[in-house]
Image 1 (tube, helix red, strand yellow):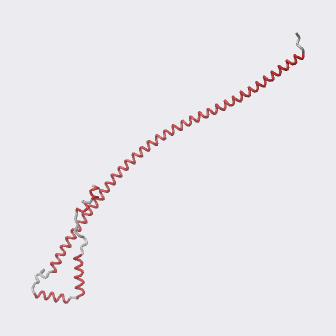
Image 2 (cartoon, helix red, strand yellow; image 1 turned 45 degrees about the vertical axis):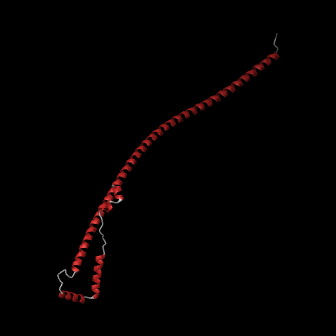
Image 3 (cartoon, helix red, strand yellow; image 1 turned 180 degrees about the horizontal axis):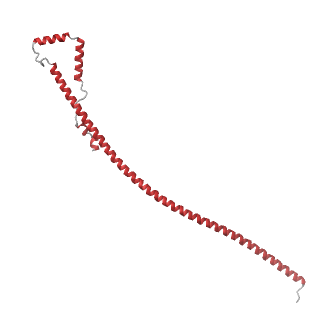
Length: 195
């Protein structure tokens, strides 16, 4: 059976069409493969960058943990130092309070001692003044001496006499330093609290 020329041409055209379709599909597949390879390369680069970023984050994490540990150690040391300083300041405050109370007690004792001395001197001065002002101090009991004393007192000026006796009376009545008790401060609650 012989094949006609028309059928041969038709078969050739079909083969050419199939070859062209195959070439087109091949080119399309090739372009798709290249595109996917490019995406794979980009993904690989992204993965590498992410790996480097993870490594960097791990390094920063280690540094942060080390700094946190150092800060915790420093904080603990500072708290211990502050506790020691607070205890020392408390002891110093107690010591200073005791010193102040002791100084106040000594000062009060000295003031009371001086007041008692002044009170004693004033009492002795009053007794001396009473003895001096009495008529029988120097044995002047006779009427002659009395009359002389009366004449002498009459010759003085009335204003000067009143002024002198007024001044002596005021001096005798003033007692700016009353006699005090030395056990006053030592029996106070503040003194016992400090001790």
